Length: 206
Image (cartoon, rainbow, N blue to C red):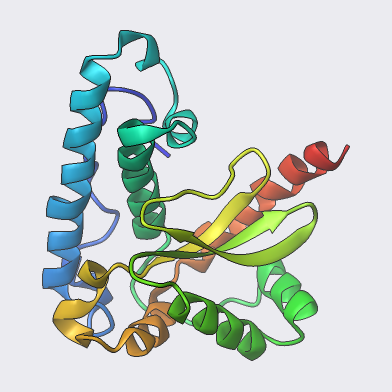
């Protein structure tokens, strides 16, 4: 991620807010990026302004800290990861990650079903993730702005299932939002993340 240390800024998205229509609406994207993410960035900067010793820490390191710094840095990390994992609608490429998903989950459709069930299971607010851990793909959840254990897991995909991510368009129908999210995943970014994670997890195993 760019801008990985204090002071944090809200970098522009690599696509327009309306680029994900009709699957995720422009108003939601604007509010999600300009208001919700910005609030976490502002809060984190205020907290770090009072903690000079922590200002050299990376965002990833900050997410593993307790208290308000961990919560707000998690909000920044999770939202950035979510936004960077989206793109205007494209067909799913049959790249090596796709083949790995088919191998481990029996089929891509089976993976989608399990991922959707997992995202629906999040009670209240949180995220569902596809991560690479010790040579295996895993689907996990984190509550609120919790972040996967980054010294053990390498995130590949995540979906934000806080209501602010979908309520304007999908109301209380989280399942419909998840179906539409699958249509705007940036599989090239996911593929690059997975490729980076392979040597990362190999070193952990060793």
